[in-house]
Image (cartoon, rainbow over all chains, first blue to last red):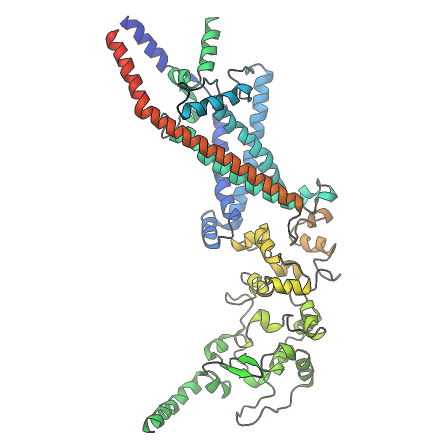
Length: 245
Length: 313
């Protein structure tokens, strides 16, 4: 009896790889460039707060250097994003990654049910948490938010960085308003991204009692079976099922 | 009486001190220590000149009468000197811009003839000379008092790179002026909201100010075909910094209020931002509450439960 329990404990403390090194590097590039973009862009967005903003921009080497950092970081982030899409495409095409409802990051109807279920759990009506797959709805939201940001902020940012070249692609009838639209898109969505990361990502990956001060998965890429069972039960069950087959 | 004489005596003793402070002319002995203002033909004017500041200005070596031509060095003689004919003629044209001495205001043209001609031909000058109004800017409106003009690169000059926008804004930021002349009221706000203006605020040396696009002495209305911001002239003007600027590109910079599309797009984005933030904050707060609840109450129960099971097993 006692022996059996020990093997179970060992099994639970065993770790498996959740994110490989290539994904981890993508993530490091993503958050480094994100922080650089947020820090250098913030001063320009709130330039009207003259004293604070020009002090802040001086820390980043003055307006000219801050602009160079911002553009370089932006292009690096877009390249990182493009690489991610190509890499995931490659994994899917070669069959190394399969789309399954328990492991996919694609939003499914179940995610909506999970949101409601989770809220019921928060307020104490539901007694159990929803059972998540490899990616909970919160993680899917986090992931697709980057796509939205890349689309809106990335494209508008490219236009702003290369205005003369970008103007070639705009039809004549848009020129009266397109630039104001682009500036608004870039600045408002950047604010959304920063606030979103600050609340959502920070709470889920840093402040949550079980991960505080932070989840180490981004660095080690590994997750214990115990944690997997707790946080991603559907993925765990699928893995056990596949192993036994 | 004795007291008064002694005060006068003290003042006389100090006279050489004042006289020593300048060696331009005698005028400043008194005009350096005048307090208060006087009513002159309905205009409140200040007759005092700060001798120190005057001396360090670019015109500090001039004698007062070089510009105030009508006046004599001798204060007891009425101002009836012969004035240079060109200055005399010009002074009549710009008389309504002068607070006290139109001749002095016209005298700038003696040295700065080309600039003065540009200003008179500009939209500012025509407002004064042709329309007979005093709204148009003349030399002192932008450069400040002639007594204290410093180089345009000086850090205190109102026309230097970092102050010229506020200087233009003293008039162009006024709504009533925009209404009066049917010009764009949004110019200052739209500049400071633009990338040009924001970079300028942050101290970017290459960020353009008003004068880089609109010109300065010879400034023209945007509806004047000779204006650098008129129609296709913009291609050349924008091209000074943006190489390869074309007709579609130059439409990017405008002082006009945003049209309906960017306006509603911004409203839409604000709604999106607020709803996402509201959802995020609500979710995080509720989750934090439930996490704390679980850590404080439920987990302990689970642990007790498990421990109980272990002992029983």
